[in-house]
Image 1 (cartoon, rainbow, N blue to C red):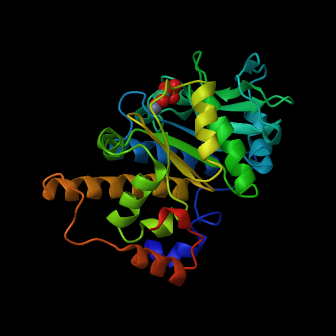
Image 2: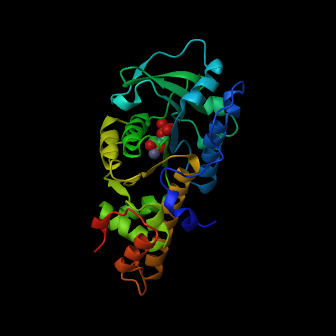
Image 3: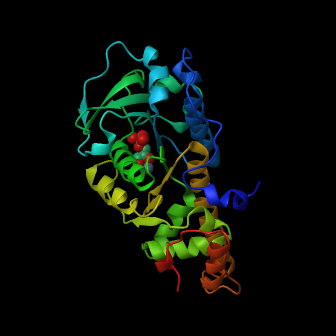
Amino acid sequence: MGILDSAQDVFGKGVSAAKGAVSGVAVEQQPFMKGFVRLCGDGWDQGWHERNGGNLTYRMTDAEVAACRPFFNEVPSEWVSMGVQADNLRGAFFTTTGSGRYMRNVPLDPAHNVGIVEINDAGDAWRIVWGLKDGGKPTSEFPTHFMNHSVRMKATDGACRVIYHAHPGNVIALTFVMPLDARTITRALWKAMTECIVVFPKGVGVVPWMVPGGADIAAATSELMKTYDAAIWAQHGLFCSGPDFDTTFGLMHTIEKAAAIYAEARLLNGGSDDFQNTITDDGLRAIARDFKLDINESFLD
Ligand code: 13P
Ligand code: ZN
């Protein structure tokens, strides 16, 4: 099955084997946790996670929380304020990679490198209820993940559950040589590979270089995520969102592959973006028409 076969359900209805909860089964054996761990290993295999680079969060279902609860720590950690707040995430539970922990190590030892955190009733603090052994804490990008979850949950009627941050090399490289605006970069990526507009019809947002790991970059990113389901961080990496692990990983993979093709085509073209052949704007419109895509029209000439 090609990407186009599933074009109509790329957003909100992607099918993943890694869903659901099984009572009486350890946290590591829960289907959602297997999907979470698999994505971490796959991202490492792609070369997107040098050292501790990148992070992943998943908003758990009530059934998954119930199945995991018997395995929660007897005493949760103290509440830790996030510096951001979201009403629609009061009392939510997230699975999260640990700050300073390596994606490469997640499949070897999930309970050490991954944790489950509970959000307080005010929606502005977390506490660890499982995993992140030996003094671990959630990713330093948790404020951005959290605000992105809030925005994408609202934008997708609750379908969005996964936020994934990686350091894919070609996307980062493009931010050194291209104008840092969503329209320019989205058009380049849409035209780099025919199926891109199907996978991200709203385009990709772009955040200028900012200090990572705090409330300011969380606010800037989540503002863009009201429109886009992916946002590039200049000279840093990419944030992707989606309803499940397959769709979210696929979005990251597609954007990075398009960036690689675009970069290679420019290199083959002596650095110029004046290509001999390209996909026209009318060509993009024709894909949108045939695949009934709700595209970002303002990005077409
Ligand atoms: P963490 O190790 O805190 O997840 O940070 C990695 C990263 O990519 C920061 O942007
Ligand atoms: Zn990063």
